[in-house]
Image 1 (cartoon, rainbow, N blue to C red):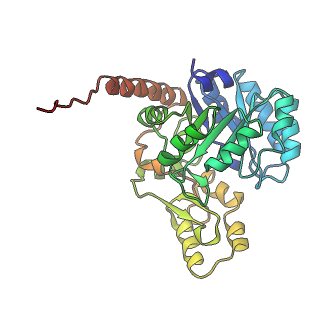
Image 2 (cartoon, one colour):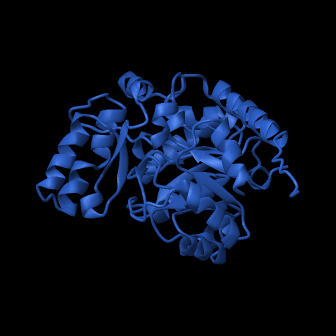
Amino acid sequence: MNKLCKILNIEVPIIQGGMGNISNAQLTAAISEAGALGTIGAGTRSPDEVERIILETKERTVRPFAVNIALSVSGHAKEIAGLIVKHKVHAVSLSAGNPAPFTPYFKENGVKVLAVTASVKQARKAEAGGADVVIGEGYEAAGLNSPLETTTLTLIPQLVDAVQIPVVAAGGIGDGRALAAMLALGAEGVQMGTRFIATKEAPFSPLYKERLLEADDAGTMIIGRSVGRVRRVLKNSYTGLIIEREREGMTLEEYNKQTNEDFHIAGAIHGNEQKGYWNSGQIAGLIKEVPSVKDLILGMKEEMERTIGRLGAYRVESKSAE
C-alpha cells in the first residue's frame, strides 16, 4: 500500500485542499466517500461554525477526513484544535504558519499531522517537530501562496531528498497525468483544490464553475505581489480592480481588507464577479467538464495507471560506439 494511504487510512493518494470559508461538509464528505481525504477549511470561521461542519461531515461519511487550520489567518486556532481532538477527526493540515506549537498536542491525541510547506527549510522543521506528512505547495496553487514562488516541479524532488516522511505535491495538479508525474518525482500523493471546485457535489456558484471551464492557460493571475501577500485567482473584473489599486500604491492593510473571506464568498458562493474573487490554480485551463467527485477520482486513478504503464514500456535506445 502507498505510504500516504496507509498513514491516512484512505484508498487513493489524493487530498482535498482546505478552501477557507467556502469549505463545506457536502464536498468534503463526497471526496472521502470516493476514497480520498476530504478536508474542511477552518478559514476565519468561529469555533461554533467549524464544529457544525465537522458534525455534518461525520453524518455524511464514516471515512477519514481532515480539518485545515491556516494558522496566521484563523483567530481561533487553539479552540479549533480542541474540536479536532474532541470529535476524533482523523487528520489536521496546518498551513500559513509554524506547526511546531500544535504538533505535540495532535500527536498525543492520535491525530495525523500534515504540514503545508513551501521550502526545504520549512519541511525539515516540520519533520523535526513530529509532522507525519509534508505537503509541498508550489506557486501554481490557488489562493494564498508563498512569496517564494517556487514551482511544484522544482520543489517536490527537493523535499523528497530532504525529509524521510511522505511528501504530498500541491499546485498544478488537475488530472491523472499530473498525479503520475508527482509520483515519479518521489511524492506519495497529491493535494488538489481547484479541480474539486468543478464537480457536481461542489455547492459553489454556477458562474464560478463556468469561468473555470472557459479558462485557458493564461486564465489565472497573481494579486498581492506588491504587498507581499501572494494570491492566485481567476481573472475577473474585481481582481483587475485590485491590480489597478496595487499600481496606485495599495497598502497591505488595504489589500487584506479588500481580499478577506467576505470577498471570497461573494465570488465563489454568490457569483458576483464585480465584488468578489475566485481562487484558482493554474490548472484551470485543463478543466473541461464537471463530473461527480467519484468519477473524477476514478478517472484520475485510471489515467495515472495508463500513464505509468506507457512510461514503463518506454526505453531509451543508444547505439554502441563503432
